[in-house]
Length: 84
Image 1 (cartoon, rainbow, N blue to C red):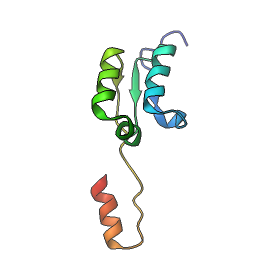
Image 2 (image 1 turned 30 degrees about the vertical axis):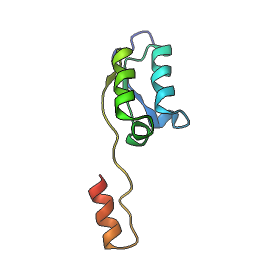
Image 3 (image 1 turned 90 degrees about the horizontal axis):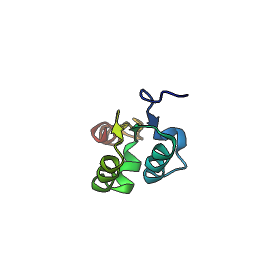
Image 4 (image 1 turned 180 degrees about the vertical axis):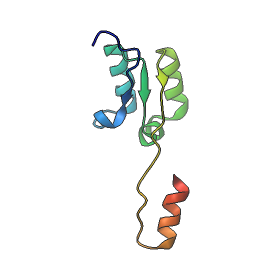
């Protein structure tokens, strides 16, 4: 694929990589946009991720923040909804 200008890496496709590894992989392969999941963002830290993205001129095309909406009772279900 020669033109990667419309390509974005959804980090779930390489979920064995940390967000830092995903960003570095994008740089290595010329991918200029990323679609991180919030758990990876949480693990790396928003400030560190922001700096890495800016320093490497990588855009964020989306933030995958959704989680599971299941729970064993009403309170757990409501907590899952609140978290999303």
